[in-house]
Structures are given as structure tokens and as C-alpha cells.
Amino acid sequence: MATAKDPPATWLRTHGRPALRIGAAALLFGPGVSKFITYDRSVAFFTTLGLPAPELLVLVVGGIEIGAALSLFVDRVPWLGAVLAIPIMGVAIATAGHSWQNIGVLLASTLVIGTNARLLAVVG
Image (tube, rainbow, N blue to C red; front, top):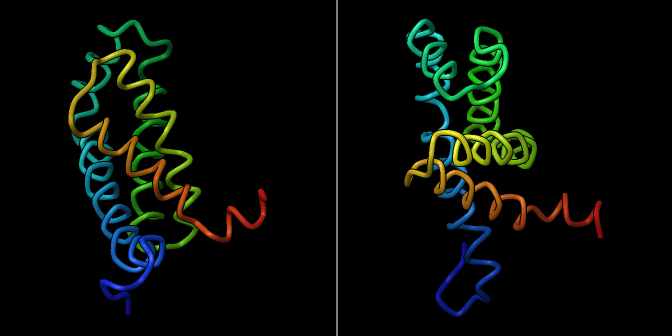
């Protein structure tokens, strides 16, 4: 267990990273599920944004959001869930505009990737 005397990296792995994972998962899961529940409205919204093949894109984006959320929440390959969330949030910000949710997921996902020792060991 990390204490106040531990280096910041230890505290982040012990307490901060789980909070980032679970927070990002919670912010991804709801919109992902809603794309299936309100499919027609989601397609109409994607159409107004000018996105290509909105009928298919709603399903793909919703599936990626749910998959990324589950990956982050259950801590199974969380870096992969974070990597999947980043382009989804980038496109959401670019097309629909920024919100605290998509900026929060983008930042949390970036930090999850940055604090994943296994990923850093493979890359570095």
C-alpha cells in the first residue's frame, strides 16, 4: 500500500491509476450503450455531423466504447481500452465539440497508457 512518503509514481499506480481507469470506463460505458438503445437518434446525430455511413458508424463506435469501458473497468489489457478510447474521443471533440466527459476520457486514457509499466517495458 502506498503511503505519503512513497514516490509519486507509486501513489499513482496504487491509487490514481485505478481511479482513472474506473472513471474513464464509467464515462465511456453510458454513451456506448446509449448508441444501441437510441440507435435512430444516434444515426440522426451522426448524420448531422456529416460523418460517413452513420448507420454503421454508430454500431462501430458504440461497440468500441463498450469494449474499451469493459477493458478499463475489469483491468484486463486496460492500455488497449485506453488506446481505443483516444481516437474515439478525438473525433468526438473534433466533430461534436468538446465536453468535460470527452476531454476527461481523453486525459484519463492518456494517463492510463503512460502509467502502464508493462506497455512501457515493451516500448522502451
